[in-house]
Image (cartoon, rainbow, N blue to C red; front, side, top):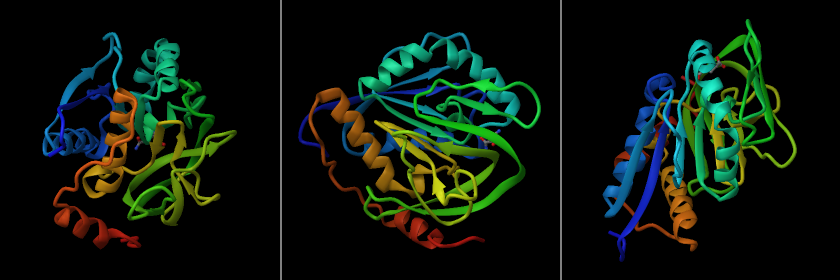
Length: 244
Ligand code: GLN
């Protein structure tokens, strides 16, 4: 339990459309890991037509091209607001299709280019090959340093400017199957191709995001109390380095 009453607010963006491969599990993990420590959570689902209000952490999952088209227009209407939130150090986590819309655009294999909200300096174009399988990456900011998950995308993402990779691919394809990068980070905006869902078996990253959201809200650094993550890391470690 933390030594004082803490709170964070979390928004789940467009869960009815972008929630592929159990991405909702990321929200459940963030909420439970706060509740287990006595940190209260204000949680809001934002659907098409809803106003997006200020939050400490925003989450958006993945989806097929069709669902991305439905969400892209709605997200774009909120671009300026969300860029302000980024610059106010709000935390963002986007998975796959949601991640692609954090960049400048996503060009699907067929149809028009989807404009992104440019939270990070990146762009995505659909490739001919679909990347499907387990992924392990090495980060330089987490302990343990690994992240594990599952990828299923045809989009090839390229990072530019100050946008850095989330980590280096050791198993799987990652952003584009060529430059050995996976995911992206700019300020407190994180994107990744790792479905799974990601956070239940990567508690190191879940707690990192919660600490950043607390720092954004209270203006000071936090080191969360440890939880009993025996099962989580047994699962994590059983997947590290595994392609199949
Ligand atoms: N439609 C995008 C692609 O195929 C994203 C897919 C996803 O979110 N899993 O690259």
